[in-house]
Image 1 (tube, rainbow, N blue to C red):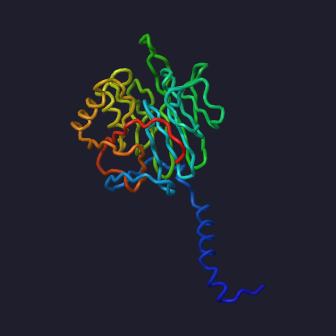
Image 2: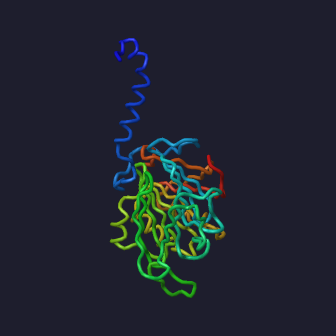
Image 3: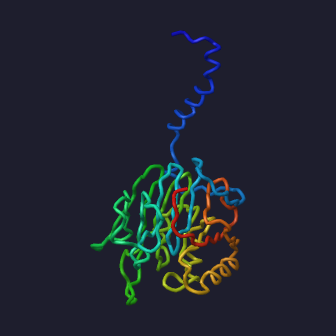
Length: 277
């Protein structure tokens, strides 16, 4: 069938849209971000959106040390998934840590496709490095203290999420300074979730040294259930040169273009579970 010039011109918008979709499938996703480039742009948190652009990641603070991350492809991840703090809808991926029951569950929802334990129930190492949709998820194990004060080898994992050209790290229930090898494996982190309780995890003095070594431009506190721990941390962070910002929205959308050029502590308040946006 011959197509006249007028017919071609009429259908041009649809043809262009089809070409854009085809080209988009050929462009590599941000899942394989190399965790090394820090953007040079002022930090402006984006307003809440229904849909994410290909270069955006949505963060919601559920509570304690549980965050829900949503990727441009719609993959939802719950960190330190447990029976007390979890999204209202089961995520695609659940990461856990072995500190105590508010950081894991032995009975995760069976609909969760990927359940990543941060420690080996049988002892020894456990290594994760998987690609789920548009996000790469990997872990770095660290030692942890038991309730009796003794050290438990490899009881904690730092989980790293590489997506949308961002590298996001959840430090878990961190009890020790990081080694040079740990820092090398982490790479350049853009956003870090850090426990700031100043009691059951690292004391603030050691934590600030860890955060300086990691060098993330955006630090999001968690695990501040002990009275006064949040105020003590924000005061210390401010004294160490961080700009402290208090969130006005339970949801934060981050992208490389709007990462802060100065180090920022961004305090999100727990929002609990939710339905799908």
